[in-house]
Amino acid sequence: MNRSVALRGGAVALLVVGFLAGVYIDQAYPEYVPYIGHRSSSRIDLSEVQQAARLIQADYVDSSIDTKKLSQGTVQGLVNSLADPFTIYFDPEQYKRLQQSYQGKYTGIGIYLSFGSGYPVITGTVPGSPAASAGLKSGDQIVKVGDKDIKGVTADQATALIQGPEGSQVTITILRGAETMTLAITRAQIQVPTVRSATVGNHVLYVRIYQFASNTSNEFSTALKSGLPGSVGMVLDLRGDPGGFVSAADDVISQFVTSGETFETRGRSGVDRHQVGSQHGAPNVPLVVLVDANSASAAEIVAGSLQVHKRAKLVGTTTYGKGSVQEDFVLSDGSDLHLTVERWFLPNGQTIDHKGLTPDVSVKLASAADTYDVAQPSQGYAKDTQLNAALDLLSGG
Image (cartoon, rainbow, N blue to C red; front, top):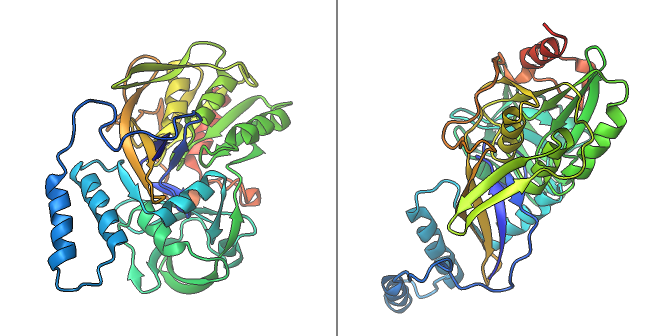
């Protein structure tokens, strides 16, 4: 069993791929560790589990038992017993898709979604993707995938329904205002940039980070180098960002902060303090960070650390509030146990777990459709009240 640390967000927003908002921390680990409970000398009594498995194999009325499903169901049962929404079991196929998503590529239709108690809402499309070609827009609500009503589904459930083999079709029913439309969309390979930028307002650099993936640090650095010259300020948009590589979060913070701690984790092994790195591309540029209820995990690390360091003002709404760290344990069959192992804290020692970050300037957005789409800048941002509030703040208003 291999393991790697992971930091995931609240499963509230995603590109429709096989991931739940977050990815590996870049660290090396041993090739093998003992099965469960490896951090302590205590042992879990699995005798009843083993006895039940033997009885099912020997006496269940249907002799053609799928032993693989039985084994995976046993692990799923252990996970469910923890009652921890961030401890997750991925079967081998789900974990394979998860790894692909870490690289910013997957097979799907190319949409960004946000989740709540209602229907998932499209917050953007990948340029050139099947979703964009089909005419899907920000603000569209997905009410059905195939014949299945998806009100209140999680990001993982939506991913399983919408993603599929390249060249296959998925039928999606959307609600746009009062109009309902059903579209058949052909899935394709999608390569997704995690960072997009544009110039807005009076020479203000706008940079949106959709997720913190393996290529985010380089993409963000490139955006700064190309966009900062001539800019009088900057807006960093972390709305709908579910998290990801903590190394990328560290790198983004370090672009703006020159010394000190980015954040710290606390677990059974003690305290691990993350320090500011050496790359400072924008140490003095006036900065405002946009956040919302779907900004989670690594996105909260960045926003919270910049706020604590008094390097940026936060504008928007209270963030998700996910202050735990998970570790991925790859089991012998290629499945993955995504286990909560630590909690993280801001540089001032505070946790945002279950409460989120409070913005310096609270501004609500009337509709998800009003969000500025940097992939389609010609549509403008007149209705994006949060972005306009950030620009007012930068101009001294």
